[in-house]
Image (tube, rainbow, N blue to C red):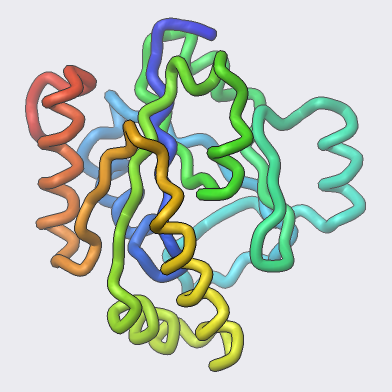
Length: 190
């Protein structure tokens, strides 16, 4: 599996995963590798999340050809991370992926041995406000996502690093850096 570590970032829709990833890419581009994420949802240029759009038929073909290291379904879409993460892990890099809470439970032991699960916890009120602000979901979808988030919070892995995503972006970034340093994954804060 390689010498690197996989940082498996999880959190509810609206918890700030993409914001944290952008901060980490800006400050730690040499130390952290963030692979492309493929989604069957078209890209919205006004959103922070940038992924590779892949129509369902192409996604299904790529999955059957073994092009993905991980793939899962959530919120009515298919998501995947390419096999390229193996190269980065073999090179000793810290690989950061925006993953799924439900998919994490299904990872096999080989992945869990190199994986550090990180969860961005956000209150129902903050999550609702953020989802309303981005305007991608209707009210019923927002309510369903918030209810799912509350339920999923009860089922985090024991070894999960939990960050308080109700705070400012710099505060969440600082929490992340402190935890990575404690785990000896980063030598100094950037």
